[in-house]
Image (tube, rainbow, N blue to C red; front, side, top):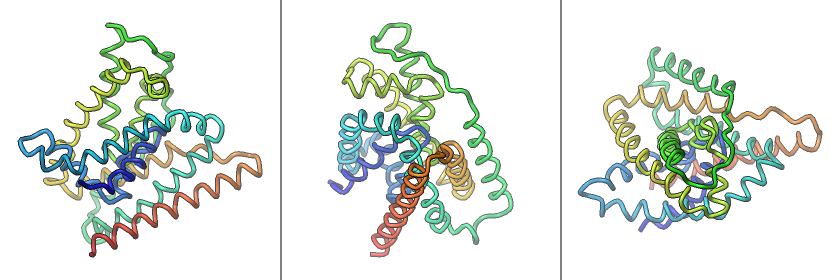
Length: 274
């Protein structure tokens, strides 16, 4: 069993609760992104037994975090939204040098790769101006809303595996984010089950597609990933608060995120070299 994945699942679970923060980006920071794709894809095959040791601790960490911290994240976003977002903004900015070094951008990227980074980044950044839907909080499952919640979970989970694309932000755009958070906070099992089923299907499909693209079009895929991460900076950026105290707190949160990303990157580089 990969018991280190318990704490990794904790960080990925926390990020998946924050609109604008990608679980895929956190997986990159933790140095397990490609291992995660391989494990999810391989788990739904004949060789599933060899991947369960990687996925089970990760799933326990993520699941426990989602259930335990849903109310805390909801509180932080309502009362300290800017500071919470700036912390994750620091994480996102901090992972960019790590990824560019991993893929050796200076040596392997051509003009087309850089152009792809710009186009994808601009496309994602434009989502910051998309109006979010608000359909209210669904607490009772019906035949009319079950399919919509399932498809929303599917779309959200496919986004979760893409660095830079937040599954929570997709749910927010689709108008079911508060329903999902409310269901986790109140342990509304029917709602959790329907959205969770969509999440599982999305994980299966997206993991296989991304894994295929990384194998066949490695640098083009990384161009898209880097573009998504850069674009997500504009999506998550909350604007600096005018109050002096909150301004300082936001800067501290940003710096803390940068330091945490740097520490994780350094740790993963050291582990890889050993």
